[in-house]
Image 1 (cartoon, rainbow, N blue to C red):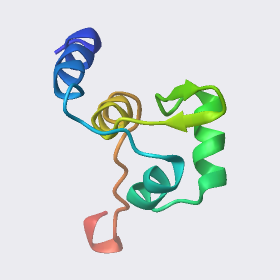
Image 2 (spheres, one colour):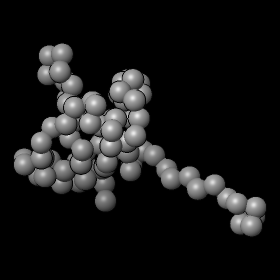
Image 3 (cartoon, rainbow, N blue to C red):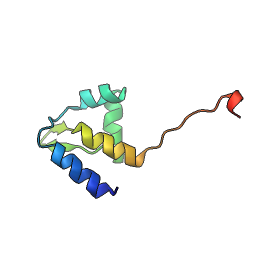
Length: 80
């Protein structure tokens, strides 16, 4: 599925989805708000800026991260 299709699907969901703030994104990703800021600057998190207020849609954050990040599993000695 293409990114545009995923974003259009998340756009349909966003009609009822509430916006969340930076603190909530950090809580869900288990990171500090400063790290959320850094990821925003690097383009790793999609966000909406309304004046000085920054908000996110969790479905878009999940979709964006799943497209751009990879899961790394460390191998144990038994697995080598």
